[in-house]
Length: 91
Image: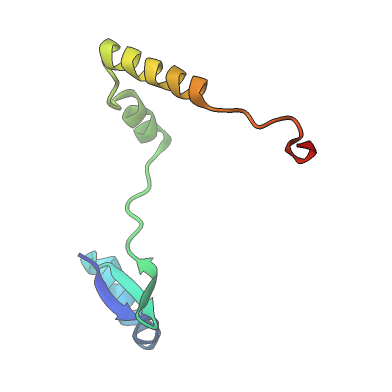
């Protein structure tokens, strides 16, 4: 769970905050005036092209029944959309 700290506190302890993110995997929600304005967290390990390809090939897929059901819902949604008139300002 991210730790909540103020932007001022993060700025004053920037090196320590970054080290905690990098070495300990800590994440932070930064606040200004009590409102969360940013999140600071590690970006993770970059993937190679081969790793991306493997993830794409291994991604979950819809079974034929679910795919057909989704297609029906998509077509029904498209049919229900009302296109705006060519020039609504003329009416």
